[in-house]
Structure formats: C-alpha cells, structure tokens
Image (cartoon, rainbow, N blue to C red; front, top):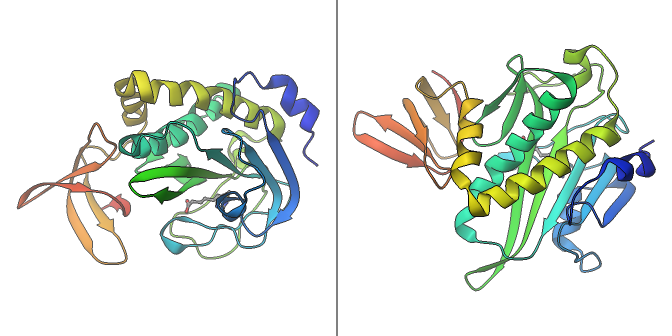
Length: 255
Ligand code: BTN
C-alpha cells in the first residue's frame, strides 16, 4: 500500500503533486485526468494502484502488476507552450532517469522519444495526451508507468521489460521514488522554459543510439537511416540517402 505521508515528507515542489489523488483502481490514470472536471489544479498527480485499461504509446496497452509499481498521471493546464511539448516529453523521461540514478546508482539509458531503459530493458514508459481549444492547448496529461518492484514479466513485448528491483536487486520504496521524480521534474520543466538546451543535452547524453544506423517504425511506414541528432524542439533528425528528415513519432531500434 502506498504511504502518502512518506511521499509527502520527501516532496519538495511548489506545484507538482501538491494536489495528490490516490485511487485503488481506475481504467487509466491518463483517461481519468483527460476526462475529469473535478481535479483542475495545475500539477495535480493521480496515482492508481491498479489500471484496468492502461494506455501505452502508439495505441498499445500498458500492463503493470497491482500495488508493485508506479502508474500515475500529471495534469498541466497553465502556460502550456505548444512548441515546448516535445521537450516536456523528453524532460519527463530524463527526470525518471535522473531519479533512478540518484536513488539506486543504476546506469539508465533513454530511447527516443521517452523510453527509460536499464541494461537495454524497458523500465518506464511515458504517454502524453492533450486537448486543445482553437490553437491553444488547454490541458496536457503526462502519464508515467515505472516498473518498480515487479519481480517478473509475462507476455509479448517489443522491448524486454525489467523493473528497478530486478536491476538494483533490492526492494524499492515507491513513495521516495515518486517524490524524487516530482522534485526533479519540476526543476526540469522550469529549465524547458528558461534553459532548454540543458535538458536537451542531459537527455542526449543518455541516448546511446545517436550516430547509429536505425530503423524507425510507425503504423504507416518504416524508415531507415542514421540517427543524426535531436533538434531544439525534441524531434529526431534522421539522415537518409535523400537528406535529413525530421521524425515526429515512431519506434526507434538499431538497424
Ligand atoms: C509506453 O511506453 O507505451 C507508454 C506507457 C505509459 C503508461 C502510463 S501508466 C500511467 C498512465 N496511464 C496510462 O493509461 N498510461 C500511462
């Protein structure tokens, strides 16, 4: 059972997680925050011990054992700059990586756009969803699933999964990890506004595929090329025989 007091004691943010909603079960924390009009405070965090229809990127599902991991979403509804959303996406995975490194001294890698890997296996995934009015983004929901204490995984995965416990070989306090993540994420979100190059460089330093021959798959097509860079807006730059191309979404893997 998640101990809210333990979490709160370590929380050192101004707004992220200051409104904290805990539920035993919901379909998806992203769906809940996207649809609710009940929780409107900027920075609200909704944590569910169990999701019955956890959503993943590219219409996949996110499966996570009950009460062992962290499945939560963050509501952002103030001062959203649409041009910064991809950087916010990178900042989320960067913050997960930094919090795991700080607390468990593990080597964490990032895979564009926002997979968090330990020893090449997936430890966390992030799904951003938004709603707009006209050309203004009204609401952004950042959904994060971190495999924390799950002892084993069954099923079919496009990247092998792991958990922090499996890699660190010890049990992990979810409360401490969540507060550490939110403390770091609030600072990284501030940097996205004022010093985005810092977030971008910290992200790129953890991405081992830059410079490699890669394959980028989406529902529509598969592209091949060299992963040249990530641009200032967070898009992947792929060097192909036809020149450099900006990639907005897809799954990257070594070719
Ligand atoms: C991915 O890697 O495909 C993204 C997975 C995102 C999963 C999290 S769990 C909390 C939040 N609620 C959801 O339904 N999905 C995200």
